[in-house]
Image (cartoon, rainbow, N blue to C red; front, top):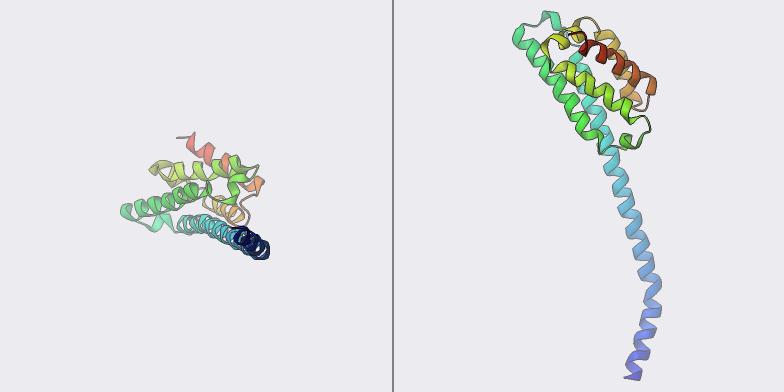
Length: 159
């Protein structure tokens, strides 16, 4: 029994460095996977904004009623998806996340109403595009977020 105990202690002493190395490598691999997942979520978030911005750049006035409804709902869908992805993105930890959320949410609300979406598509299209491009490039752009938030808020309240 003493011999068995002694030999097991020796095995444990010799195996311990290998176990530690394996544990450290495992932790590093898991951390890399988390970073990769986070980057994919962040990319999906911005891709949805790119989709919405592309739709917002369509010529709204040349579309018939059915086409206008398609543009509104597709833009709203991209914005809604970005809002849902935002809570899993790294931008949710941003101190200016309320500005980012407010800007995207108000633009989404504008797209869900035919009157306010028409105003966005026809009157403020260029400004919305400028702000969205800045937000897509840098979702932490406080100035662009606030400007888009204020613009869309004023459109929503002018119904």
